[in-house]
Length: 243
Length: 329
Image (cartoon, rainbow over all chains, first blue to last red; front, side):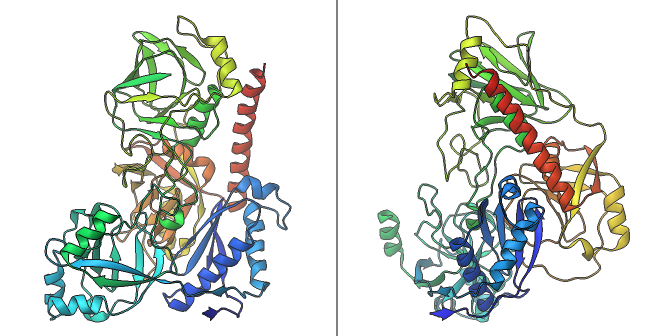
């Protein structure tokens, strides 16, 4: 459990007639992630009339609204942007006593190497490691989902050990399969859908990361904690069949 | 009501007003590029503004009516005809079964919307009927329309739609005298923009160029975004920007200083500096731009932009209400 008791510091700027961005800082950090998540929860519990959604990112929370509804709403301010900005600024005065329960850790089984991880050997070579060491290091830490971006359900994970970092591929692949686990620089991530991609692919998970047929389509969301667990091919097949 | 696509044209997709509320999971909004024309097509047949329409890109497309159908078309990319007989835009049209309707390219814009009474019947995916091509979901099987695809209406006709259908249906092509007024696209296309968060990251000459020089759409333009040809922007700093939310209309500056205008299918976050945001009221005009078109940017304030947007929304709501009133009984 961690409690955010202090007042968050932020600046607010419009990005559209129907969206403003709340900026909490300019560096990626777990603390900032907690603050953004807490503020997002506070806003979810105290929405304003006409609010339509929010998008958390590394250092920002962007709040979307129906400009017509806000313009009509009885809120202090002359324009919709002003009304929303004033409202969000007011939440700052609100003691942010939102407690974030550290989310359960989601374990992602991964079958590393061979056909599932065509770049595993390359990542090992770049870092002067064996492929087993890469697998062990990749699974040795708990990662934080800083944001979902790039494509539906794609989680940007923070916390990867420096010892296995690897540059993007010089030539992106035309088709990276859904479930592929990749490394790019200090980041690691899972491709939720078949797509082109330039990350070094070291393995694949049999889990469905994004499923449009269910109401919570994304397995991961900002603020989640993630661990990777190596599995073998027969376990992969078993999980893939069961899902 | 049922049609079969005989010729799909360059890119035809089913769209509504977009998939909202899933951007935090990186699901783009998608939806009709030109929301004004899409809504005009819908209101002509008594539909809800958010009912699914077909978005055609240019003409060179066609469909056949398998049953009688109450349809409307609106936009700037094509004119409709049955043989030599033109089918007017911006009004409800009853088409009997067995007609071959063709869409013929016109030079003004590029996108035309086809509505049907009750809306096109495709399943809702995450609360929307819009096609998101890059991930292959929504709309008609998550893909662009192809020859021989058959589309039905939902059968859920509003009272207005029923009354329009009663007035027009019969053995012949039939439409009323009235139509929704539609402005021609301006010859000189000036897009109003509001300076965005990183506007001041660029030097004075770049800013002057941006607000006075012409830009043109490159061939690398699609529903995700437009690459613009024109003077390059020069940075005053080399500060890195961490990915943050972007939305359609955001104008980003890429590493080489060129401009990208994000459109309906754009990603939900981006890490390029943002020089400006297109006023929402001018997004329908942007939606009709074709590769090679020349545009100019003009700076306005957030207050002006919000006023323009609210006026435009009120106008279109009034038009829809007047059709509802006309066909109330």
